[in-house]
Each structure stands twice: as structure tokens, then as C-alpha cells.
Amino acid sequence: MFTNVLVALKENQPHQPLLELAFQAAPGPARLHLVTLVRVGTEGDEVQRLRRTERSLAQQAEALTAKGYDASWEAGVVAVSAAVDLVRIAETRAADLMVIGLARRSRVGKALMGSDAQRILLSVDCPVLVRQLHGM
Image (cartoon, rainbow, N blue to C red):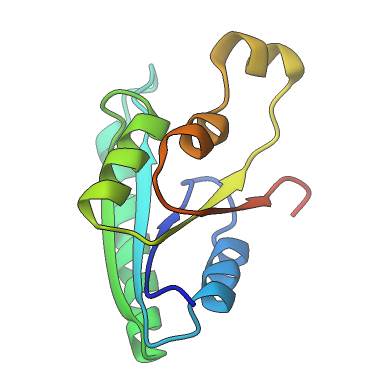
């Protein structure tokens, strides 16, 4: 079983399926580190989105602590790319497992932008559990 799990949560995707996957892989007592990265865009509301994300992660970490997990959280703005940033965070936190979700993206979108999940799978040193999030 795993004892130090990084759970990469997207701000507009359901979190519970990824947390349940982490619970199965690390039934406790384990360290769960929740991470959400906010992408900078043209909306100009990144600071508000980041604050909402921080509040949500803090509440989720508190609930996980109540369940007996050693929970921590981290929210930030994407610096390089989400994949590069998540791999760096996993290495810094010495994660022995990463849990990520897949969002729906068109074939053209994947061809033009690539896939953060694919970059993570090819770059990170620890095992990765992946769950599809679309249709949920």
C-alpha cells in the first residue's frame, strides 16, 4: 500500500472520484496531499479563483484529517505547464503515488495542446492512478 499520495484535483471537475481512488490505494494512516493548479487566462479572475480553490482544498483537507489521514493541500497558478508543475510537486513531496483525472478533450485539442496526463505518465518517478472524469 501507499503512504504518501499526491492527488491532483482540477478546479472545475468532481473531486470525490479521485479521493475515493486515493482512499483505496492508501487506506490510512497515510499522507494525502491535495493539489490544484489554476490556469492563467484572459478572464482576469485568477486571484478570485485561486482563493475559492484554497478554501475548498482547506475544507477537504480538514475532512480528510477527521477521517484519520495526514492531509495537506496546495493551490497555485500554473507556472510552466500543469504537468511539469505537478511532477515537480510530486518530487518535492516525495510522493509514492499520484492520482490524476482525465477530462474530456477533442482530438484536435489533444493534437494541438498535448495531454497533461500523458506528460505526467512519461515524466513522474512514482506510479500514477488515472480516472476518467467526464460523464460524472
